[in-house]
Image 1 (cartoon, helix red, strand yellow):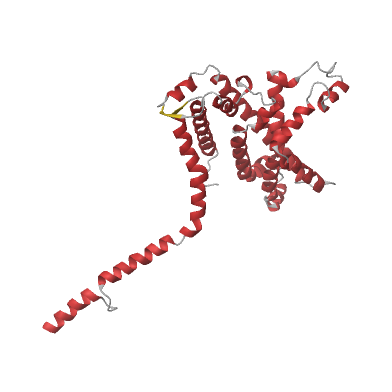
Image 2: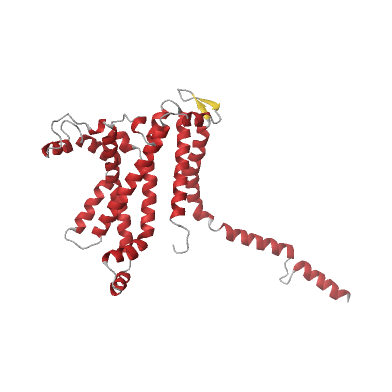
Length: 322
């Protein structure tokens, strides 16, 4: 009886495998911990890159927006919310925000509509299609700064290529009489045109990839059902193209909202608050107040986050049908 009791006691301490129960539990926790840490070597570089490239600049931007700097750039400590108060008291801020909304809506809308038509054309067979596709890459491959400078030269009131063309067509009566880039509305329209010009190639290729992913069987089924061309495009092509449309539109919104070189270069580096979007306004403000410019950066960052969340919400990004 005494020997049986001792054997049970020994088994309860050592376990069936002869190892102590406490040691077996410790080994099990170590194995689970090792399995949990297996993905770390794979995700650690990406995590470190995000922390260094995204998170750290955001934190530095928030810190700078609440600091006081003199004209030489020396930090004089915390300024609380003073920089934000000065920013929202700026008399030109309302105009800057309205101009930014017009800029983003106009460029993105025209870009998406134009790209959808061009992508639909490039999805068809026609002579020289390969050359046309390659030619579309040129505006995308060129530097945005270089493109803006070239258009500024082409719009020169004396001998710009577009000015000469307008003169030959009778639209301009006399050279040096019309300087489109010196007037606010024509200059803004030309800046929108250039922004669309550099945005169309990427958007077209994104939509073209989406069109080529549509199975031909659905078009055959629509044809057998007697659907018209318009009905097929509206009920088959556009719904299946929705993921590509969503990605292209979202990238364009963020890219155009943060666009700086087009407006800056087409104004010859003399952009001011009268023709500024928020990005240009932030640049011009930092020359006089670094803290206020950082506050504008925080507001810009907030706008981007809100735009993305609203856009994803409206597009039902997480819905089951996606």
